[in-house]
Amino acid sequence: MKVLLLTPRFPFPENGGDVLRINGIARYLRERGHNLILLSFSETDFPNNADHLYNKTYTIKRKKWESTFNALCFFIKGKPIQCGYYYSKRFKDCLSRILSVEQPDLIICHLLRTVPYIEMLGAVDKTIVEMTDALSKTYSYAKKSDRFSIKKYIYRVEQSRILNYEKHVVKNFPKVVLVSQGDADYLENKIEERLPALVVHSNGVDVYSGKKEKYDQHKICFVGNMRTLQNQEAVFLFVSKIFPRILKAVPNAKFHIVGAQPTSQIKELACDNIIVTGYVDDIMDYISDACIAVAPVHIAAGIQNKVLVSMGCGIPVIMTSLISKAIPELKDADNCFIVDDNTLFADKCIELIQNPDLRMKVSQSGKEMVMRYYSWPMKLDGYEQFPLL
Image (cartoon, rainbow, N blue to C red):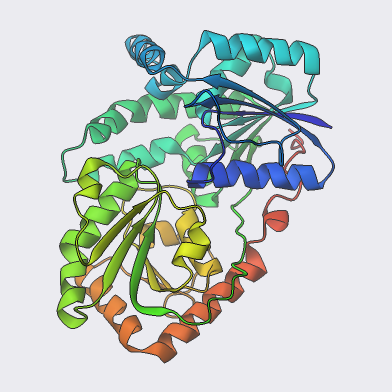
């Protein structure tokens, strides 16, 4: 089968959960003998080579002035701003040519941002919308942020627009994919009816196969693309409310902020005890010797890839209850720790640092859980098939 994948961001390097997700889907499809065509926006004239995964690759360089102009136009029309930001006539024309020449059997739209093109060109019937998360749910949490951020206000404006578009998409497309049952339930409750097109294919993860046998007792990691509000909020919360208490008990503790595109405010956090890495070539290799992975996330939907990646490396994870709900196999004090109170969060970090036996028990249990329940082939089984509506 010939499969066309549309992505708003070029999927290499793999520096965020969104590209890890779409490439995980692509690998699953490739291993089943499907022919893959990629059409993607790119930030550069010469993006990374994708030929090892995709049979054919088409790219359109995104122009920032064009994105800004179209975002403003969509805003005025009451449509999702992000769909306007990723709208381009050149992308639409290229897609039209590909549909005519390649005649794909299946189209996969990665995120809502690419969906308008399919509606404009009349290819809805053979399209899977890889929505991944219910963004309107994520954006509804933006009001919890107590920091000034332009993204916080954009999220507030976008929330109702995105929810309306999500409702439209799940009612009109033959298959819409989310990564968590919680997000599917959320949308069904908003629409107040059963949605047979809505299907859950959770995230998978690769288990770390490196040879680092020792861990750094003082290394604490946070993993995530730092362009997003939810990751920025989590980092600032940890640095201001949790890490100072840890340092009083463990003065040599080091907090590693591991993720691409850190803002200037994130970079300013760097000091003797805080390392801001920016993009790293291999996230698993970088964090594999960490003592703890932390995820004090209070703005989120779907499955947080940072949790599965860390567990796949054999690192115990301390997280909030909000993001634990998307992974039903998590068990507090068994394969992870689930903590919402900042003081208790810090105390649990200290306990893991000072108790190697407890750390080993939790890390082994977490890795076993990932290996048993979160392989990509298991989670994506039947992805390319449409549900019976």
